[in-house]
Length: 223
Image 1 (cartoon, rainbow, N blue to C red):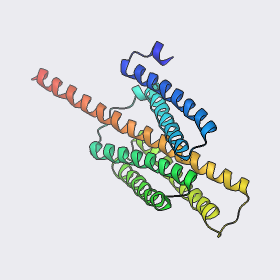
Image 2 (image 1 turned 180 degrees about the horizontal axis):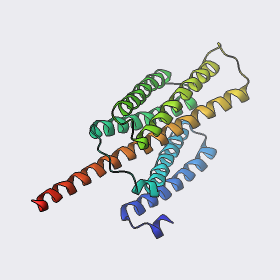
Image 3 (image 1 turned 90 degrees about the horizontal axis):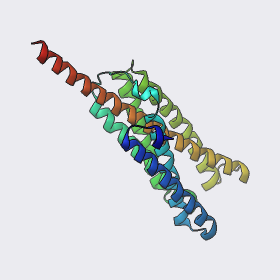
């Protein structure tokens, strides 16, 4: 549908890349069932999250709301963009480390360290948007959602760790599996929310640049 109806050529190729990625994901899933390799399972998980993030990109860029975003002036647009982009990268890295921990039982230290980094960056995003862009609801809402998901994720991660790697919390196997799966799903939602927030930051900054350009041209012709 995107390839037939979308006028932006780069977006059509992005949709084609998503299709290619889901095909690769299907092949990896088949090999995962046959070979049962830990490395393949980690690659499969990383590819799945990359595909999910790409579908979020396509969903955001093809909405009417994206094209109709208000041309607001972000006084710290560059810093906010970099912060959101870094947070998205940290979340994706954390997802991969989580896959390593889930399939091998190793790198708990790295998972905890990146959890702290993700928490710090998420709080910095919320603080910066609350201080400088409190009326920009296109940024404020996803920032609040991201922070709420962070709190839920920290709770799920703590309980999952206690249930799976310590004797402090004894849960049935089925409950542990459900808890771990929910923890994984919450991480994916955090990744998707961070991607959407980053895209909106870039869109609003681009709109600001375009507005400034038109104002300059108007001033030149009026004089």
